[in-house]
Each structure stands twice: as C-alpha cells, then as structure tokens.
Image 1 (cartoon, helix red, strand yellow):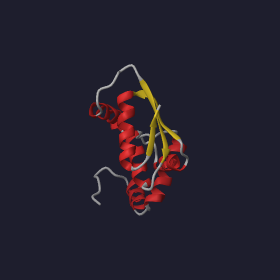
Image 2 (cartoon, helix red, strand yellow):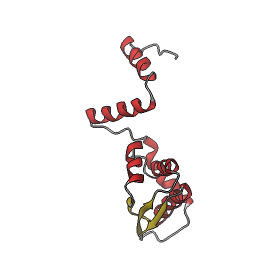
Image 3 (tube, one colour):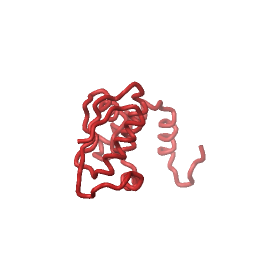
Image 4 (cartoon, helix red, strand yellow):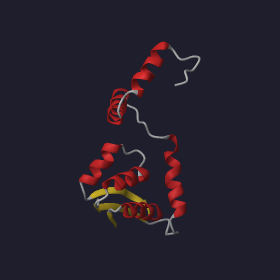
Length: 133
C-alpha cells in the first residue's frame, strides 16, 4: 500500500489493521463508528440516483404519489437486497436483509409515481413480489 507523505505512524498502523479485517468485521466497525459519532456513511451521490431512476421510468402524473410494498422477497434474496440498497442508499446491508425477512415491508412511501414504478421494476427484476398502492 502506497503511503502518503503526511500520514502519521498512528494512522498508517490503523490503515494496516483495518485492511486485515473481514467484510463482516468492517461492517461492524462502520456501525460502531456511526453509533459512536452519530453520523451516517451515506454516499454523497445518493441524491443523484433517484433523479436518474425518474428519468428512466415512463412519464406519469407528477401529482400522484404511490407506496411500494414488498410482499415476498423471492428465492434470490441477495439480488433483492442489492436492489433495495440501490433504491434506498441509506440502507445498510443488515437493514436491507431485515426487510427481505420481514415481509410485507414498505420500501417507499408517498413517492412520485415514476420513482415508485422504477423501484418496483428493480425489485421485480431481482425476483421480489411487489405491490404499488
């Protein structure tokens, strides 16, 4: 691993220790840090994803809102978890998995019709059973 010029020995040691962790341990570390400091690891580009999904969906009435409810997660839960995390990038892996286990689960509430349809299509493509209300 290339070392930065201004990186202290303490930071370098932490980086080496973190790189030795398993994915599960990294997930636990991120959750513990979020709890400790009261922050979220939400990506900065999260706001751009719903806009892109809205452009891809067919045009619908702007004033109507819909709720997306997943009624069954299907056989391929991993694909559904990935789709859930694409739809709502604030969801962590555990939260998305819990949603697949606790169906029926509300995925989006009072979303624009085109956003709701795009989310439903992603979940259906992943193998989930979805209702629009």
